[in-house]
Amino acid sequence: MSNCFFSITAYRNRRFRNSFSSAGLKSTTTDLGDGTLIHCWVPKSHNQSNPSLLLIHGFGANAMWQWNHFLPSFTPRFNVYVPDLLFFGESFTTRPERSESFQARCLMALMDAHGVTKMSAAGISYGGFVLYSMAAQFPERIEKVVLCCSGVCAEEKDIDGGISKVKSVEEAVSLLVPENPQKMKELFSLTFVKPIKLMPSWFLNDFIRVMCSENRTQRKELIEALIKDRKLSDLPKISQPTLIIWGEQDQLFPLELAHRLKRVAVD
Image (cartoon, helix red, strand yellow):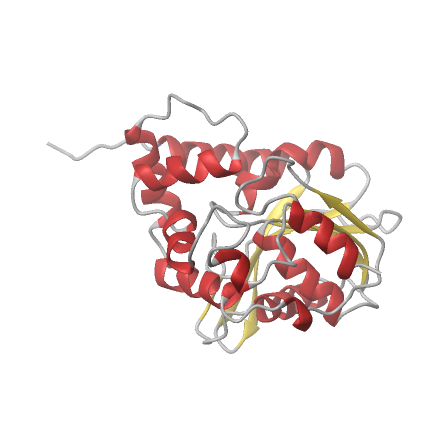
């Protein structure tokens, strides 16, 4: 008898692909050289009269899962670019760098390859770290910034027994690179005000198998590089107009970090 298995996660991923295509975007993969490939959804037709908007996802699934809901609001007014960060979706590198600054440089090289010289950008969670680095490194290229629940101003001491409910780098890794349904449920309890109570283990196992089983080691290294020796004094200020959006009950990156960000990092 043949082995048949229906994956609701894979099915939803196909639906998202159709949704992105219907919104006027197409799937592309750009070879940046040195073993680095970046997948990105780009406009099928670039409208010269519209500004460009870069949307950067956070940890979890690929970019489609985090930005699909917003496309109908953005695509009529912007040339929208939605990349998969390295080690998510179809993006990968053989290079050893794991910092958000390297991710930022790769995304700017991607935009160069698509002929985009100036853009505004929004980043969710980890994507906000990458965006902040882009804004600091390329101030003449990034025009406006939106940071969503992104603990850019967090320090290692905030994770290690500080204001966050996550008390160690190891715990952060276990939550953001989950290996079992219980860890996913713990992550939901920290990041949702009203977590879905009836979340069957078979669905969570399916999601982990499809979305979280590849590049596990590299994703862990991304988290470790993000947190290790992180100090507020090392963070550069950015000068772009910046909108900060936060969940007031966020327990992963508490609201205090939003006020800190506004106070010390944004001119």
